[in-house]
Every structure is written in structure tokens, then in C-alpha cells.
Image 1 (cartoon, rainbow, N blue to C red):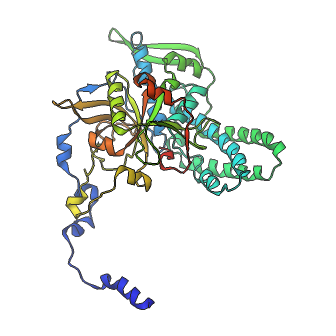
Image 2: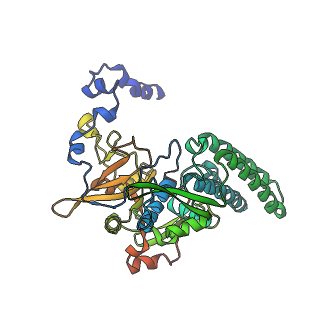
Image 3: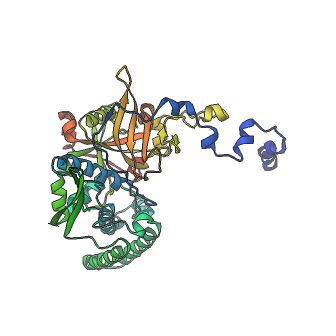
Length: 441
């Protein structure tokens, strides 16, 4: 019975079918060019009738996965700019992503060791250990993780702790640190519990020394020097003897004033509830969490934030339906249906449930465009891939793309209604760490 089945399976390869036009063109050309629908590009110019007022330089995360930190520090600098502009309009305002990257790596290493000990003592722990082993020191992160390291360690100017080779190209560093972490986990599994704290302290000292080699020395005190324009002349101003927490305080950015809102359409996770992801985070015992609200509410809150001159940190599936030349995102901008008669019918819920669409990148929404019917048709995005990416470093998403591929926005608490704020004080529903929304962008 096996031979006929195999023959049937191979039968299509024995027939000489005439090649279709798309097959002839596709073999030597990228699909992103052949199937690009230029009508969508022409319908959505980079024009917006509502934008935040400050125009700060585009940043560049280089070959690293630090988008969540770049988006966070771009949000912080926007708040700082607004609070300082009456006295100082700082040229090239930018805070050090490498400093908070250092803090995240250090905290994540410690958390992983502590949770390894905890999980290793539990029955039926295989799935949790596998999840912990997968990518414990990768670059990806979420808003809550950025919030916690900023709260604990503050911020520093870019020039005080600039990028290094390994912050800009992090794969080699991450591989070494991950191997060291797993060796340390193995060591802890063979050590009596009474000695765990002593061993972890020694491990963290070694980790700190390695991080200094990779990323530089995190400053305890520094002078902040910056340029301003005064009556068409440039001046250099110095704020002396600062530390990272004092500088954060001077920005008047309070990390706890901002809330993570997610659109999770899966029926098992009802809307209007507060959720947390088990074991996910960087600072020990602080967990990634969010309010789950419908996508239209995410749009309302984003619009309200822009109207209040507040950019919106957001997480999305950045690689889905994008024209990389212009940075325009729209469903079917690469039109497979017309080009090769290929139709994708999965809903947002289906894609999320099957890990087909995940929050993979964090950026800022800084504007939107309303048509004559007061309907938002497109949103302006500030990215962190440098000025040569997209259109002068910016990207554009249509409102249809927002619906399908945006999963998370960070909103100032003042924009929420009381019933939403009250949800933050409820006991969270726990989500397993391998959930698709536990992905680190």
C-alpha cells in the first residue's frame, strides 16, 4: 500500500506544466518589487494635519534589538524638550540608550538566576525552564522593562555614555553572556541553597566586569553639556555634578504616569481586564503587564495623546505588509492576491493565536491625518533605524494597518477614564511566559 501512495505524491512533479507569468518573473526578482501596489503609496503622501510640535533628530539603533529602549528614551526626551524649551531649546537632544541597555542586561542576568532557582524547585517545570533557556539575554524588551530600569537607574546624556561596538552590533556579546548565564545556572543547580546568595553575588560581579568591557562604565556622576541657540548664536551650557536620577527628575518624566494598553482579540482573554505575564521582565519581581482594550479605544487614546502634544510608544508587527523603500505600511501593499492569486484570510485573532503576527518592534506615533469627514486615514511614525530608513527616518501606517498589526500603545494615565484606571488596581490575570504577546520587541 505504501508504493502507490508515494507514486501519487510524486505525480505532480512528473507532469510538465506550462509556467505561469508570475513564476517567470518571480524567479529572478524580489516579490516586494513585483507585487508592490504603488496606488497605495500615491494615496498616502507624508502629509499630516495633526503632529506633535517638537522636531527632534531621528535616532539609530544600528544592528541591535534595542528598539523598545530607543522608543522609550525618545518619549522621555520629548517630555524633557517640552519642559525645558522655555529656558533651553537643546539641539540634538538625545539620551544614552547604551546606559539603560547596560542596566537592563545586568538586571535581566540577576533575575534569570533567581527565577532559575525558583523554577528548578517546582514540579512539572519543563516548559518554564525551556522558556527561560530560549533567549534569556536577548536585546528585545517591553515597555514595563524600560520603565523599571529608568525608575531604578535614571538616565544619562548620550555623550556621557555613547554607543560602543557591542551596543551597536550585539549578537557576539549576547552569545557570550548567554553561555555564561547558563553555566552559572548549572553551577547553582549543584550548590546547596544556603550558598546561593554568595554564589550569585560573585556571578554578578563577574557579569558587571564583562558588561563594562562590552559597553563601558556606567557613570555615577557627570556634567551635562549641550548647545542652545541664543539670538542666532550658539552657546554651550553645562549642568554640573548631576547623577542619573537627578537628570531624570529634571526632565519631569515620571515613568509610573504611563500605562501599557494592549489589543488582544482572543476570546480567552476578555477585554477590560488587567493582565501580567508570568516571569517576564528584567527587574526582579516586577512583571510585564497591560490593560486589554479594543483596538478602537487604542486609536482614541492615541489621537487624544497626539492632540495633547504627547507622542505614543507603540508595539507592532513591523514586517507585515510594508514597502521598505517609502516606509509605508498598509494591508496588501505587497499585493499577492493580484500578483499570484494568493489570498490571506486569517483574522488578527487567528494570526496572534498561531504566532503568525507578533509585536516585533517598538516606535513612536507622532502625528495623524484626518480627511474631510474627520476620519483618520494615516498615522506618522518616528522610527529608530536612522535617517536613511523609510522617508527621512519616518514611517507611515494607514488606519487599516493600525487595526490589524498594532498590538500595544503606551498612554499617559491622564488620558484614561476612571473605570480604566481602576482596572490597574485589580488582581491581574496571569498569562504564561510563552504567550505570543509575551514576545519581546
